[in-house]
Length: 305
Image 1: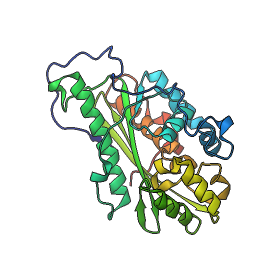
Image 2: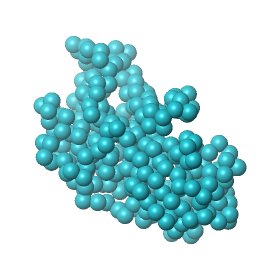
Image 3: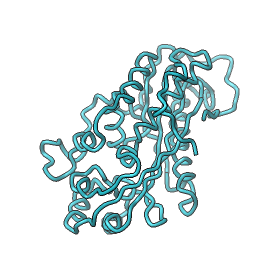
Image 4: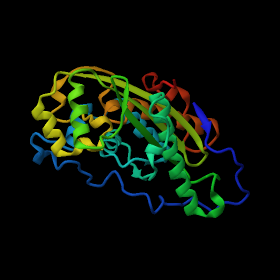
């Protein structure tokens, strides 16, 4: 579904962006080294960075390659609005070059934690996109707030995710004791992840959105595993402290309803489908880089509700 980002009319004259390079506050390229928890060769039983991600998700799929090829052929650049290592690794695994921009918003001040998890994650994902768009607009000039285009041939991907366990919404653990409680609980009853992904075309303001939900069942989590994860510390950066791809947790998975990459924070099928949908919208609007609907595989069509 495509919705207008801002309804305000564009000005008659805008700064030229035809040859504009990515914004100077965009942080890093996918080609950067980017490790988490050390190199896989040094990780032993700990988190192995990209190696752990790749082992859990199974590597690039044919649909991933198709999306990457379509973006490359269209000359579309991608900005990932997240500093999450796992999301960066997943997008890189898909074969999609990207740069990173960080929204720097107070996520705790957005949404209602006692209401629908879907409403919460979508509100935060949209707020991230709005904040990044605002920053880029301010960089172009004081008259660019709410105006388009912000960047030519560029798409922004923002997302958010929470863990839902026993009916409660769980975000990043606020203490080691809370992380221990979270991780122990996953061996008792299955957690689900609820995510929202938003793709914003920075040339038109068009927006494609979708939800992503998966559930994973674990065998009882040994206390030594709980303590290892907490002391290692990487779980403190994950929604609900859930690291299904971790070498200590992956062997405990007994059932998966959904996709591993979805649980890890960026469902490849969903983000790939949204990027293809955004390319279709460009075709309908007569812009460069568009594709025909028939080019989008049926297994990349995404749920909107």
